Image (cartoon, rainbow, N blue to C red; front, side, top):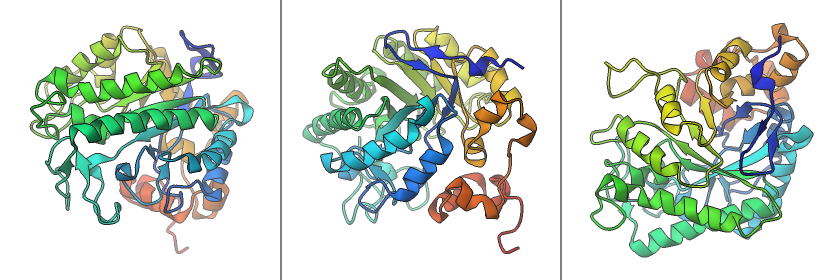
Length: 379
């Protein structure tokens, strides 16, 4: 079968062609060293899972020390990390896969233990609505300006390390989203208040990232942005907020927008009367200005093809790409029947899944049954 998701994609404003529409989205693997340096375990994992897909977006890397959100997280906060990040980019780029590194600050989604005694920071001193959340410290205006510069320097390091692009992580309740959210941003200065002012920080980060990219005209470099369309908190981000934000993002030099959802076809989390898929509403608002990556619950070739033929540009395979690193190759070779949809404990080493990564998979999947694992661990 000739699948549309196997077709190449050429970015409109960059001399970059992606060999197919399958993307591995950023997934926390917790396999970096304590200081954020790349480990051999990470290099092995990325090498095993790369090669077939069009783009591979790494687990997130923090842009400054206060941006660290969890143990085992990559860092791109200092030039000393560049050699390891260069090896990571090379591991991903085998067989023409494009290597994208996701960058962020965790903001209030960190804690003082991870930050070695420092108080987490955010747009305002409002704790997240989750168990044991700490009250963050509101960033000063000078710190906000410095954080914008930190994002820019992270982009520079990504370019120097040989990545093909960066994804600014404006989703999953981290700092960029915290400034956009009326729950976490209660500021009354230039960085908060109205919907337009809550856009100021993420837009400034985009502008700084683009400024850095323009300093390297000999290397086409992808700039992506990831969003979470809604929040359940009250007050929280509504789909109307997001659609207004997208209208402004359409004026920026973004190469793609990545929509973070648990299910690609899910409807509104805030409005039970809404029957349209949130991704389709976003697609309509984007109106082809830049390509969309969508994610959530996609595992089989038929499911991926449904996404592509519904007009979405890129299909992100999350957990399925962990279970089956040869997914694209098996589809290309008409060997779909051999695609793995579950993992045996005996296959963990082969798949490059170290214990911290497995525990993270359990945490986000509801345990072994959600991964899924084929047998009890002790057998």
